Length: 121
Image 1: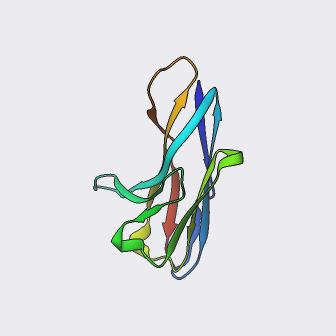
Image 2 (image 1 turned 120 degrees about the horizontal axis):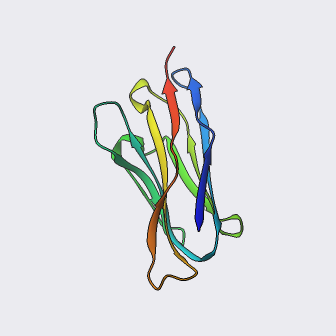
């Protein structure tokens, strides 16, 4: 089994910062890409940022220059540093990890439980 545990969401004023974390644990053999998605009320889930095992990053245009994704391979953890937050960043944020685990011969996507980020004054 694999578990993804997210933390770091909350309420922040516009212009503020938050740091999200997502730690993967369980019978993991290797981790490929890791990423963050978000879903606002009434909208579809969208990619925020992702990072390959080699450290190559990709960002949605709406967060470029404000958000930074990183990972600690030793801890199987992905982070999302969010700066200059705007009300339109309000959403539930989900981590997504593509990994290979014991007993399965192909990599699969796993999702975190989601963490609420609210940007409001």
